[in-house]
Image 1: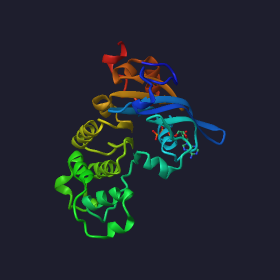
Image 2: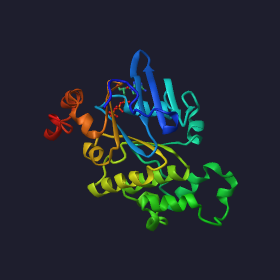
Image 3: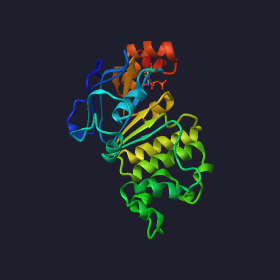
Image 4: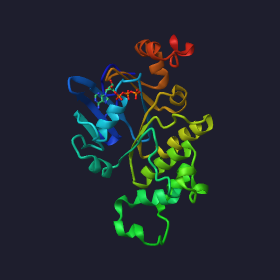
Length: 266
Ligand SMILES: Nc1ncnc2c1ncn2[C@@H]1O[C@H](COP(=O)(O)OP(=O)(O)OP(=O)(O)O)[C@@H](O)[C@H]1O
């Protein structure tokens, strides 16, 4: 476990995934993210947790270019902070939002096709599909949506829409996936399936998940960074952060979810 605002892992080489250092975001006089540092290594499902208003989404906004920030965000050694949003996406950053943004009037396959068209000539999208893209095949398998490939996205369940959105990032070759509360509103089975999906796609990718659902975090986190009032309060395995008294104090005020007896005296 590490102390406030420090870079998290012992291995902080840039080749080891996403490295965020001294991230700071201001909205006027209000500092929403204050010198936050963390690292999401390749192959890891890394959770960003913290009470409402802790700065989790703002961190993701800053990393993906939607919020102006200072500090450093490197991916495989390449600095991306200050890069335009579209260029950051082309550099392998993909993001989902709480409400899935899929084309409801198109099928699962058509949604994936359009997403894969990011790197294609626009006109080719209007032509007849001659073959199914290998990335789309993989995305159909990874997301478990193969049997639903002809189904309209609009009739998918909430969970299936989230998986489709993740699939759309996969076909865009995203290697840093930032997911904002992916299991909010999901059934237990959908939640478990989502965690298993994240585990399947993690190899070779850095996955950062903003989440409030502590059961989900406990079940699927490789590493957890706890934000509080814009700063990193604690980081480590789920067991380590749950045993951290500072985390317990912060969460006692916000939710009792994290205050479990088996960790309270660890
Ligand atoms: N565009 C903005 N202008 C001013 N303040 C903002 C803006 N966006 C976010 N904030 C503030 O920044 C702080 C961090 O917000 P943020 O949404 O990042 O928190 P969060 O940890 O994601 O919270 P939640 O879990 O409730 O979504 C909050 O106090 C919020 O009100």
